[in-house]
Amino acid sequence: MKHLRKLLSASLLSLIIFSCGEAGFGFNVSADSPVTAPISITIPATVISVDPDATSINYSLGDVSAFNDALRDLGSAGGGIDRNSIELIGMSYEIEGIDSEENLPLDELTIHILSSTGIIATIPIETTGGMLTNVAKTEINLTSTAGNSIISELSNSSDVNSEVIFDLGTVPADPNSREIDFDFKLYFNVLLKVRNL
Amino acid sequence: MKKILIILSIIASPFIGKSQVDFGNFLEASAQDANTLLENYLEPAFLGFGYGINSGWYNTAKPHKLFGFDITPTFTLAMVPSSGEFFRLNDSDYTSLRVDPNGPTDSQGNLIRDTPTLFGPNLNADFLPMLEYTDPEGNSYSISTPTGLGLEESIPFNAVPSGMIQVGIGLMKNTDLKIRIVPAIESENEYSFEMFGIGVMHDLKQWVPGFKQLPLDVSGFVGWNRMTTQLFLDADAPDQIAQFQTNGFTLQGLVSKQLSILTVFGGVGIANTKTTFNMLGTYDTEAGTVTDPIDFSFLSTGPRINLGFRLKLLILTLHADYAIQKYNTLTIGAGFSIR
Image 1 (cartoon, each protein chain N blue to C red):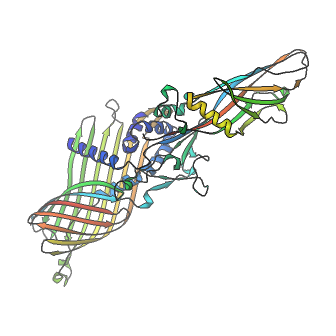
Image 2 (image 1 turned 90 degrees about the vertical axis):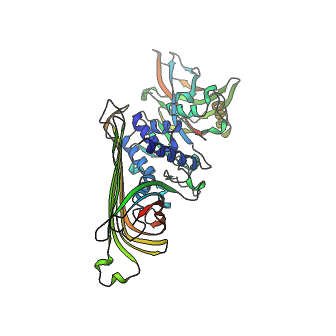
Image 3 (image 1 turned 30 degrees about the horizontal axis):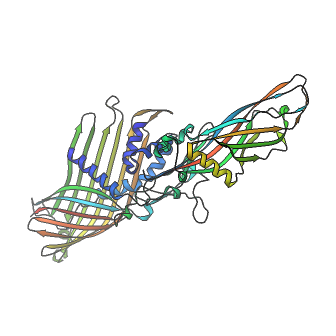
């Protein structure tokens, strides 16, 4: 039986040696993963234009469990990845948790992509009828500049920092003052390419 | 579940190593889907092996004289047909997986759904379909399907190798009994292996008036063999067994003509092969407990025609034949033949 096992091992090894085609062995893996930012807006007792503070969102490839093995294969332990190994398929966003009586005027919704030196891309988001309301997962139209900036950040450090800015219009006064809490979800649909395993 | 993945990794040899970990984790989503996907991916390997060990039964239509015998090892290559190089991923065949609609497309813009089998071409992952899984939280992940070995890029054929050894003994009435046997070998708590095959070749000319004068040998042949391998996966869980079994059946009419040391032979008939691979027992996975998680079964029946030659130098024989069937086979062998 020992000889049979050796024979089988040798056959398997020969098969693998002969089997290395030009393309080699590799795989693509993609994940459309959200980063959830809880947002709280205080409505004051007087009529005023409310501009809540920017909310920071950090997306890290290392936080996506589906990428764990791919990142190891890509040798990203030092934080960087070959730029050709990353594709940004798209981005989308979702707003949830707003009650119907809490709809507020929303003048602008903007996402800034940040680097250590400051804002490197600005992504304006089209609002729904000028109101802050629940929004089902919706694709964001990315310019190639914004897309390239995000890929650069991901290839340099495996993560990307951004901030979301809600610019509300004039909010009706509420004598009791109150807080509106909701979640803003930013989805990054990223593809990693692992080659030559 | 890791144990299941290790076994699957071994049989899907090109993915031994890190990449299979990714794919294995992905397949933990559904054992049923893993079965479907890997059964399709591995089909040519199992079918080819089945056709391979069903070959090499004879190299002449002339039976031995009484108590004459031969010992003949053979080596067979079962050629994978072009239809065995790809399989189609239909979403309806899977419960938790589907082809990612954002995956690669062909030159006409159609989503690629054909993916290589183990014996298919070696493709860059950019040209492979991506399988998508959506977790209970609604997050979706996709990963490329495995690529093929791409054998034809390195060697001029795409074939599954196998080997066999048999003994033929001449009995009365121009009948040969052919035996393929490896008595059960078992290493406690590790593995067991056994093989048994039996074939009978019988001269037909003696029964047909006038045929005796024909300058040819004409025989009928029927053969059956079974090979079973078991791996005992865990000494503490004796029900956990990986079992690989191949059955083959062949029924042929044979003709041969001896010209000095050269014999030309051929056969026409049918061949049937059935190969199964099972993982038996109960296994704990992250998703719960699964019983008998892997159950592959590959069955093929069809006509078989072969043509070959044998050289006999005193008692040494060298032979080769080519059989046309679903998986065409090239068999070569060398042995000893007395009387």
